[in-house]
Image 1 (cartoon, rainbow, N blue to C red):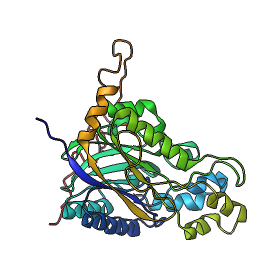
Image 2: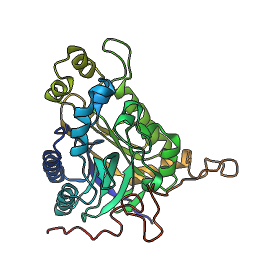
Image 3: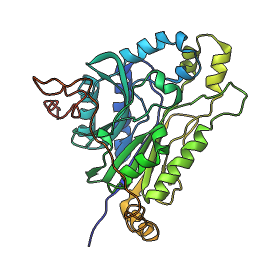
Image 4: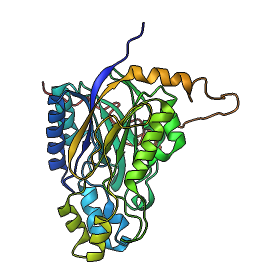
Length: 346
């Protein structure tokens, strides 16, 4: 008979050290070690944890944000850089899988940054890199569009792991692309705040939207969903508001995100963290995904593939094609392919 993985997962509700990639990297490694000491085998970090979610783009006019964008670009990192190497070493040292959000830089342009999720194996290898397909609302002012090359589910000893970033968890086709690959553990990473209206007006409820879409994906896919969101520290709000009381209020009163872990019925199986930093833990038993599939399996019998068809373009974007040699790896095949394996101590 088949056996199914059982493990403990950790969803980090954590604040970035804004515009400081080294401090964020050190903090991530400390939290990985803490989660591992508590028995976690999968440790999940928020969207753009290294090293800033661009909340300023939602509260300042574009002409007033050049200072922030310059710092944002300067603190972005590459997939094969020293920050990722340090996190990979830590994952290997503790024998845990790590999912982490980064602002990904490229050697092709000093101002091009992707909103990227990286999945790291318990041996320190990079299992997948997914770039957010479409930045949401004001995020378009800072992040470039990703592509389908990272719409992949990775088969691991913990089960089949997939990940989407923030608003992508509302994209039914992106979610189905992962479900169709047998996903049974999903990772959802989110921002700390998402201001959409002036303070005091009815606005986007980030917590409600996270609970709704995370629960929907867990329920529809009959899978576990690990939700990790950022926490915004008061000193960061002060820094981003630059003494402007209206801007400070807009950020401070915007609804807060939450971190939690949900089961295949869409209900939380961990504590829900919102108002402080912390780690939400839950025990995951992939066997619990089986019986719900008997009721509704949208990638199995509960569909009509003779009626509906669905395709995914996994080609990575490239700024140019050169006839005298291969495409630069940065925009062609995922960058770690063809790049010498980073030396991992241990």
